[in-house]
Image 1 (cartoon, rainbow, N blue to C red):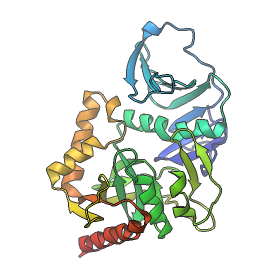
Image 2: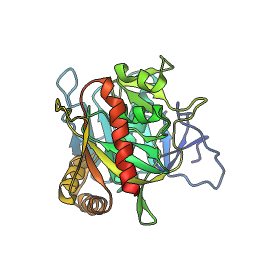
Image 3: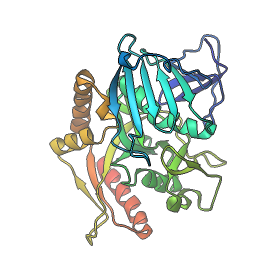
Image 4: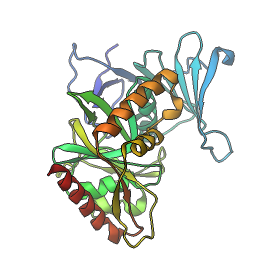
Length: 328
């Protein structure tokens, strides 16, 4: 079935039966390829089926206010379909070929809120199950290439991307950096044209309080990247370097950059890929091969920052100086 709305995100052409807020529509033609279709009006096709026909594929370590896992992923034994279940009643059904997403809400939910889960964690799962290696990172354009800021939740990935956007660098992705191999390089695919920022960091990008809204998927504020001064990179760029955002330090030298040798870089990459807990052994082997190539071929640095906004300008200068040395 051909849906009326078409978008491109993470290199995938999404066709939807409803408009998707904050995404830029692309022209849809009868012969245009369709990678994933999204149905916002689906009934729950598995609500009356036997739970024994499903296998619990993944359980989130994060819990809701009632102590229940915030997320569970089930896989149907007979068809290979997936069910992504959030404890608040939002469910995404994926077909076995990962080309159809059907969305069900147990209770009324704002469309913007549903979209946050769709464009973030759900598409992250789709990418991983399709074999796409994704870093837990935000990425920005720099000198015609991409640099990624990788780290655990709360490390400052989105904040650092916002800092670079304020300095004129377009943003490629926020939180999930999806990689594709092209012409012997690993390219970062564009995600969506907004950042999710903590409220206290929001003004770093906008300069003044702008049109933002809350995002329940990440408990942050959505900050648009496109206005009269576009800050979103629409085309994939080859990855030039990865900066691992280490734990903030009181060291008087901070902020500073340390080179990670290939072996340490590989272990850091393995620990900071997105959604690695949902992979089976075959997927993990593929991922390890790709990460090994990245660790051997790209500069990977540890970036140690200090608390406080006054250090952010120095952090930006440090990365620029490091990139300049790499170009010599």
